[in-house]
Image (cartoon, rainbow, N blue to C red; front, side):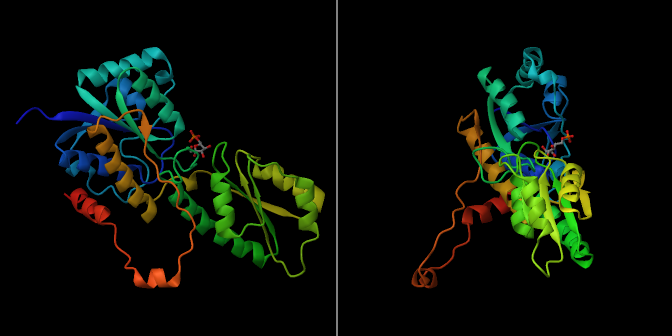
Length: 321
Ligand code: F6P
């Protein structure tokens, strides 16, 4: 039997729940395809420092339900310059690594694109709670973060309605309102403030002041990229004359055990990444698109049998090696 071909993977940028599940999929599916897998620590920083572990079936056991990333993550400034990239490429070549899977957000893919331009075969898997990467409806970690936030929002709502209070809740998202909008819709927020759409705090305050009789709470969700909860609360207090409480959710949004959706996406994305490398593809990102709302005739759905996804079924068994 000839020498095994080598691939590598790394997690980069802010950690996102489901990254470990992706590492497990890529590793086990790659081994199933007779590849040897190198896991680089701390993202591109590990590539530069040649800091890696050779992953086997056991090393990714018991991590499917763990948040964070056991390969650790970082945002490497050194990798942004040519010299850092050259060091990373030298290490990939030294270890005879033929393909690389980068798990992270758009910043990480900018790095991946640079590697591709310099001759490295590289594919990306979107993983960021911000869900701000184009080309996919969902990035790994987004659904888990939303579920964590939704749970907290219910608790805040209990207090808000018990005391007839206004709450301003600040969520993460960097420059994106994706988390805020989805939180707002899932929690029945009264106002959602996001960087993408202009808002008028005077108008909001006047509506809150004159809110309908019997309304016991007001929930305002603000994306960190739009304004700070304390600034929004001060304006509402000043303009509406009501007491306002704030809650900045911060880092409790990022960790924790991944949701079912994030684990399933981790399996699908991870498998596809390895397939793409085997097919010789590069410079691309895997995603899921067009979960469109559609209408079906009763007769069509009553006649039809809903099939399970057999590929997914098979993949679950491959990954349980
Ligand atoms: O990208 C994920 C994220 O949590 C953003 O929502 C947030 O703005 C940022 O990371 C915080 O970054 P750091 O953890 O480096 O402070």
